[in-house]
Length: 188
Image 1 (cartoon, rainbow, N blue to C red):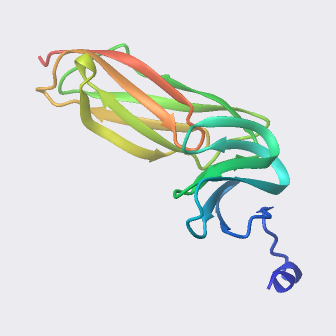
Image 2 (cartoon, rainbow, N blue to C red; image 1 turned 135 degrees about the horizontal axis):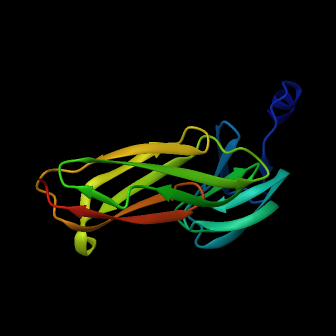
């Protein structure tokens, strides 16, 4: 089968010598997501994967930046290991929102992904909003970025509690996070 695929121009992005591990690839634009699945329960073990091209690697489950590499090591047990392989290095996120707002109004905010050696595209953000005292509200969602930017709107209810609110954005692929505080005043 590998000969047929090779002749058709289909080439895997990685390989491993472990025969009880299944490599699953998902591509979203320039982003490669690699899942290492144990084919059967064999207990905890470390698996090494050789990629055919170096890229900036991130452990999606832990958010660990693995740097530019062509080798991955993963401890497998029952759950798959998930890696993002990018042609650029993500250095962080920035988040801009107004310093104050009123209950019953909308807060517009913008998240930017900062990268070196390329133009990011195809990232997903996890947006979480907490009210005063760290109480998590129902304002949470996953959002697709357009290029390196996402602009969102938080619609506050007229009876939302006044105080310091927190907007937090996390890049799902790399684990990079940023948060900002907004002082919410009571409705007029």
